[in-house]
Structures are given as structure tokens and as C-alpha cells.
Image (cartoon, rainbow, N blue to C red; front, side, top):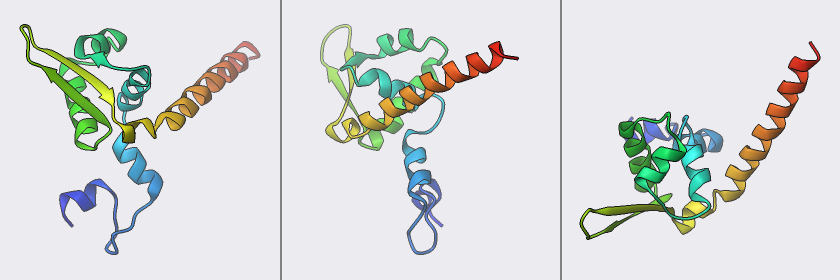
Length: 121
């Protein structure tokens, strides 16, 4: 079993659970959050740090790099001093928009429900 097979949960026939495959790409604590904020347009690295202050610089770099390797995020480097780097969703990355927005809606609904449940206890 090679690294690609392990990463994407494929069995010996090269098939795996599509949900598992999707979560390998966008799962984790930060990728969904980063994708949500990139839906609005380009963001600089430090903008993303301000939006997500709990993420470490190392983790942000790692998550963005993985999303770039998977063709979800585009990294644009401007040759100027100081260097300017912007991140945006690729056309392929934009296909995740309905999924990310559905996750946002579900999260809002769940938060309201759990708040109401706690108030009724």
C-alpha cells in the first residue's frame, strides 16, 4: 500500500468511501474554516491569521500548502518588497462552496438547538 492509497482510503481495487476521500481533502480543524473565508475572495496570509487567531503560523502554512497541492487553493506570489502572497480558491475549489455553506448552516442550526436545549435543562 503506497502513501496515495493510505491517504485516500482506497482498498486493493482502488476504490474507497467517497465521504472518507472528501474528508481527507477538506477535513480537519482548519481547512473548512479557511475555505469558508476564501469563498469571499483573495486573502493574504496575515489576513487569514487575524481571522483565525487560534491557528499557529506553522499549521496555517501546512493547511494552505495541502489545499494548494490538492488543487483547491491557488497561491499567488507578487515579486515586490516586502513579498506579497495571496490565497484564493481555484475553480475546482469553488465547487466546494455549496458544501462549505451547508456546513455553516448546519453549524448555526446546531448551535441554536444546543443553546435552546441547555436553556430548557
